[in-house]
Length: 152
Image (cartoon, rainbow, N blue to C red; front, side):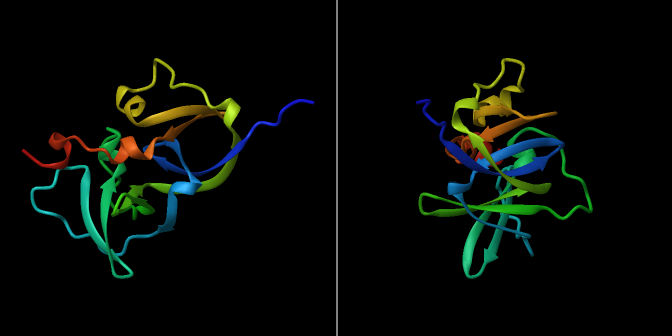
């Protein structure tokens, strides 16, 4: 009897034309941020903070965090709510995708030609029909070095 591969569900999103996935078990909610307040002296990866039903949420600019260039002006971002440790974060992304159920056995290591900044936060990749889905390791995405978190 052949052993069935485990499936993991991923919330997918697009930023700067690249598709990414976050394990659905890590996602608390998805929302459109109403008002983001800039934090003085915060680095470019921290877009600011927002109030989400009484909780203070740190908004992370995923374009900046992943080294993918400036955001499209006039385009309202979406946010993926993540709780990590005792903190709440909103990952600001260009567009939400669908939830994909993918076999764990098909997750591949990041290819050597993948951008170094993406490799640093990647848990691997899936080869979809016409694109590469980069699975994000949330701990690595949210583990800012001091130089990233505070502006010099």
